[in-house]
Length: 265
Image 1 (cartoon, rainbow, N blue to C red):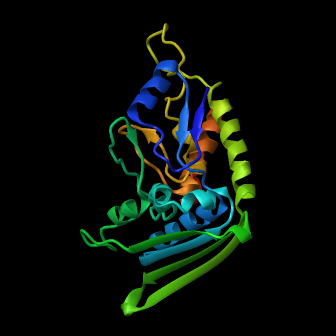
Image 2 (cartoon, rainbow, N blue to C red; image 1 turned 180 degrees about the vertical axis):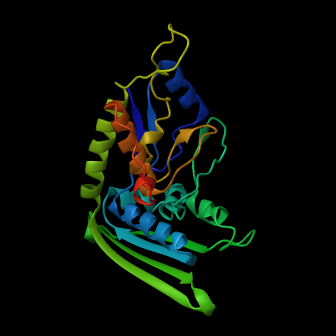
Image 3 (cartoon, rainbow, N blue to C red; image 1 turned 120 degrees about the vertical axis):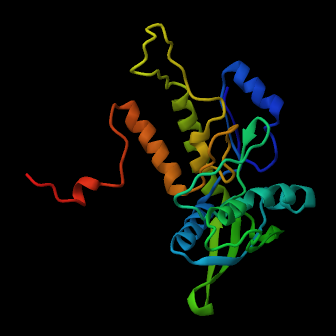
């Protein structure tokens, strides 16, 4: 059956991926991407796209549920911290490949820097800090405070501060449902090339590493050697276009060139 890793631990070692491929089953992950994460990814995407240079990204969280308790252990937090970097996606029109044996994942802060050679000099990175504290009294009601400091023209600075109070489990539950539904649907989709000269070519399904689930995960998991896409809207468009293809509809084209030029009749 399909296995989806909703936590930040490094579950998908090469042996697990090889087993999934051999058994023709799906794996996906990593770490559920809740509403707060989506907000952050869109915000930093906007900043970089607008030519505004983030130089400091600081995130503080405290919560009192089991997730907060587990993250109070330093070893667990280091695992979470690596995927929390995926919150800060700042690339709207670029794709990157990060090659790791058997699998590709993404560190979004690094991707952000690598994507824009105009805003960031070689070797330059924004300051980045993530703090997560366990406070039993608040229970599942997570408090999150985020500060983004950016450089703007003429040596100016822009600081955006966000305070978010959210029911942690209630944000995660619909994501679990969506992941299960989408993964199950993908298990029933097969395809082959329409222009293939080989009449005996069989229908095939998706790769065992189900990258279409990236929209719902903080640290997208993709097959080895393939592009890692972190932009939230591009991840969603990928899902929409795959579903459109299942209905024999053309993919969405945001260029809309036919409405932007004058054709002589």
